[in-house]
Length: 449
Image 1 (cartoon, one colour):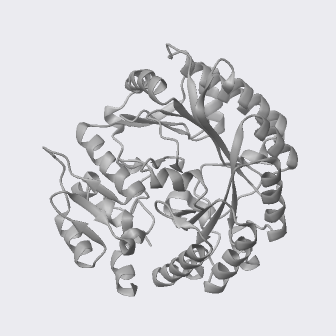
Image 2: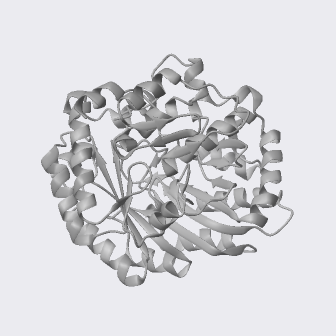
């Protein structure tokens, strides 16, 4: 495994979308094309499976130096109300293009720090979104909570509004690591909010744990997962720190590169962490995700219904996902659209009555074909070729991966073996038409290991 880690530790996408954002064709995109695609997909998706909504709540009181999200650092909570009102106005702009009542299957509140917002603000937001909408019979609402500021009132308010899933960012319990990433939170606090959520009635609680953080070693990861055993959350995201300071700027330059574990060290952290999680009864679901067999994510994986989008892995597949809020990305399956990236510009455009997108991509037939293959690999670790397939394949890369015993590749398709699961991003890269064309020379992505 050591040599394979070194061999395949190259820059590569995480494939929450295809094409990945750096390869979007903005020149062929327009707001008018996006609205047309949105309207076409809305009717079909709404009738077939409902729609998903992602709401980006960007405010944070302090900057976590590991974070690659679009955020707005402030301690001024008077910014909550104008932002909430802008999000509701954006929702109404989308509803003006709907020819029927939306059926909502999934809502996720992400950030930033959604629990920066008061329970009262979140209630206003959700009641505004749900007004004159229909809930799908299998709807699922989830939110990301900061252990330090998620209160009992947050949990009760959102639970009463239909939320049954919450994700808490743990990262690592080691104090040196926490200080380096500017995210200090005690195990006792995480335990408190986890048990509160469980007692209130949340059916799925998730913890995020990151490997590859500054000053992190094997002892840190082992102790973090050992402590996690006491709480046994329903899901665990155990993923690699994405070090991309050339994209995210000063936020990821709060420590020296020498403080980061090497690729070899990171792989050991992953392998040991994965082993510990499996021993605790978790099952690997998709890339970097683990769940207990009782969780809906595992059941979706087992039934081959697992889905992946800009929100990550989900058991709730819909062809249409509307992204509301600063920097949020929408997906109509045949097109992507991203909102402007600052709160000021976002609120200005929405208050002028404009859907605040600034870039996007219209998927070609080949894009759609590759997208499905990559989605299959990321969710099911296998894909089948279709007749009259027109896509190019990096046969050299696939042959190398197969010779290393990680996959089976033949005339029928690709199957990723258990040993190959840590390298699923590399397998997907062999199908990525934009990487094959070498249109981008500079490093755009974090390392795959």
